[in-house]
Length: 343
Image (tube, rainbow, N blue to C red; front, side, top):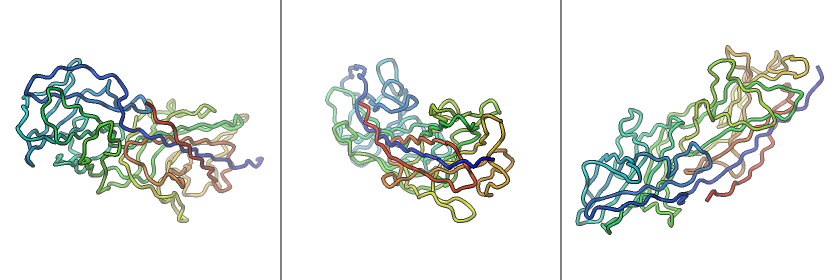
């Protein structure tokens, strides 16, 4: 068979999803003396992320004078207003509010939220966790404006192949060797649009394993790549939201891959003849997939400037698989561009 050159390109784009007022807020009058709420969510680069228009609920914990005042209060949207029961009234001392959305207090995979933390949060990949903090609030006749921010990192993978001489069948795609659980720490400052630096943090990261982000139910769901990049995280598992975490450079220890990366399980065919060209008898064991006709390709998620997934950021990984000769080492050509913040 004619030798083919290796040309695997992983193009990594990082985009910041910051806290900003992205939409008009519903008007609401507040009953004198009662605690009322408004919720604001920043615009996000992908439609599946929660926005001010789509947020339906949040949970509030409040403290005054160093003591709990509202615990696990579930607030829901009712038209253009937010309602909860029983209604709380303003105390004589300032109140600190901690809010998150959606309601996770009944999930067996999370701990009970305490003063400023959500311990043991387990990211399932499909939930866009939001948080908001309002410190030292006192009654002024208006609702408490909760400005929510994204607590997780959004990760998307765009796959394409621009060489018509080959056909790439994609079977599975995974994020390799990532943390799934951690403790979220609320900032001890108000998350107002005027204070973009008041952000939360994560600690006690654990449950390190792979995460499927594309899974075909049957052969009809297997993707054939074209020159148009396709977001494999959409309309499948919808697994896009992950614990912010440090990243380790992808490596190979002689028997297995180490560090963090993206696995693409695929088959490669000669388009003209239909002949399968990879995997084949010469494919290294580390790139074979047990009980599958596919082989496994590994792509990095790090660059010189991307060494971690930051809280409230969205990362789009563009992976192009072109003209492969898998008998040679896989070479990565990595470029980084930063997308402009959506306002």
